[in-house]
Image 1 (cartoon, helix red, strand yellow):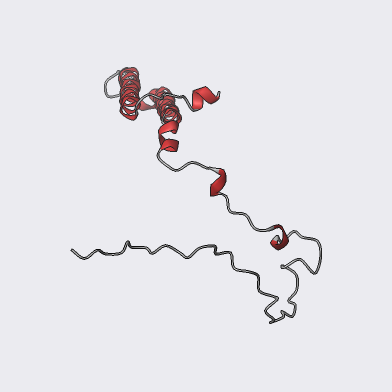
Image 2 (image 1 turned 90 degrees about the vertical axis):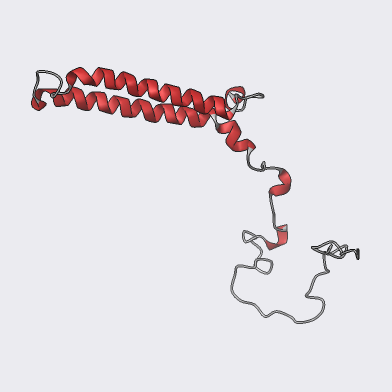
Amino acid sequence: MQQFLFPRRPLSRGTLIFCHLLLQLGLLTTAALWLMPRIPGLASTDWVTAWPALALGSGLWLLGAMTLRLLAELWLLPHHLNGRPGFAPGDVMTRSFERRPAVHAEDAAWTSEARHLETEASVLGSARVTRPAAPLKPPRTAS
C-alpha cells in the first residue's frame, strides 16, 4: 500500500492532470449521450415519466465525477507532499520533563494555584545561548 500511495517515481503532474481531464470529459460525454434520449424535449415523453431516469443519471454522473476527482487527488498526493517540507524529528519542539502540566508532584506542577516566586538569582536558570547570534545582514563591503 505504501508503494501505491508514495511511489518512488510518480507520473508527472501534467500527465496526471491531463488524464484526469480526459476522464472527466469522457464521463461527461457518456452521461450526456445517455441522458439525451431521455430528455422530454428530445424524446416523446413528458417530465412526469422522465424525471426518475434523469435524476438517477444525473446523480450517477455527479457521483462518478466526484469519485474521479478524489482519485485524481490521491494520484497527486506525492506531488502535494513533495512541495512542502517533510516532517522530520527536528521539526518537533518539546518541553522539558519538569515543566509538563501532567506532573503529579504538587510543588513541581506549574498549572496549580499561584505560589510565591522567589526573586533570588538562584531562581533563574543559566542561559542556553552558547554563541552570539549571527547578524541578519552580511556586513557591507566598501567598493
